[in-house]
Length: 145
Image 1 (cartoon, rainbow, N blue to C red):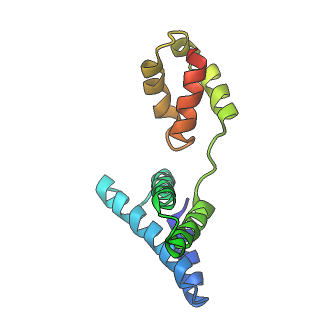
Image 2 (image 1 turned 45 degrees about the vertical axis):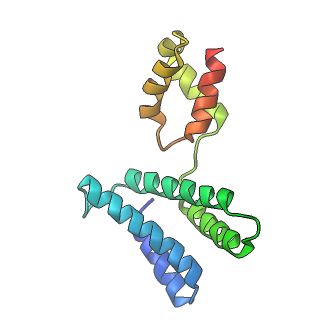
């Protein structure tokens, strides 16, 4: 994800006086900038870093939705709106089938060991940010049986 696209969309939301959308996009930009500063790439922010931060923010908002009490429908609706806005910018993640294909193609030697920890260690470097960790874990568990 290019941070300039986020900035343009934030300006568009500001012009349309869409405050909730503007705030959601603004929080994404802030999180990306903070991560870039932490990693020492303040000026030239790589798309991979932005994608990673967007996925992390999406996960955080999802947890907020899940833990929000049912009696707070207003808060839940706000979190859901933020989740929907963030998911527009999130990179498309690989499905379980695509993960299985990649594992069987590239990691056949490691899969033969049936050692789940060793497999996860080898695989996560390749698939981090491209697929959900839970999906990867489930596929590896199935392949280890």
